[in-house]
Image 1 (cartoon, rainbow, N blue to C red):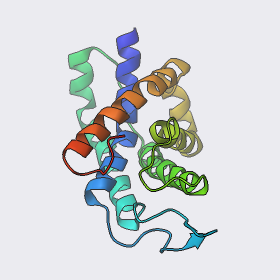
Image 2 (image 1 turned 90 degrees about the vertical axis):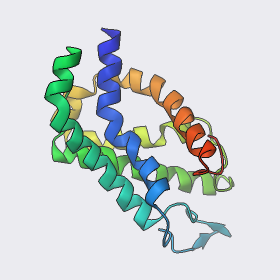
Image 3 (image 1 turned 90 degrees about the horizontal axis):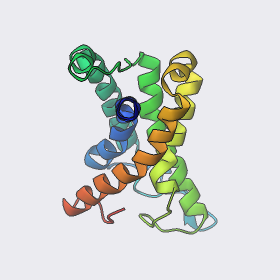
Image 4 (image 1 turned 45 degrees about the vertical axis):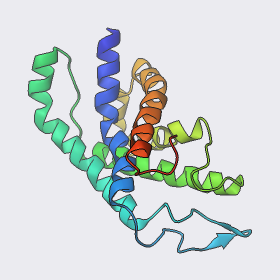
Length: 180
């Protein structure tokens, strides 16, 4: 039962887990805030770009569509009933992850933190909260059926660990300036 809950949590959040990594790999270009400041501080910073947001969103949607394609064989091999992703759910999870990261950047700048500075809790769950909220807004029936309380709890417990591990790997590969 616990293994199934964790499997469903990881499966359904993959389209939200991938976008920020894709944004790091394929980002760059003009920043979303256009270099503007508020109160002498950048609104978002150079790390939040239009290209990164688009690339991340498209990568998350592609992951959801890929998971849909392999759903049958994976479910048969594992014996776990894994959900498929309606297009609106895929968009909500992928873009929600990017939006959560952008909003976290805004909060960090307003709190005086520099780009890349740690903000425990916010750094690990910003994209989770935004992607889940957007999924419930854009695909409410699907989200209600998939994101049960046990699945949400599993997501909240597992995500910070995955976040730290993947960021550590990106740091070791020279893709990030900080390991968190």
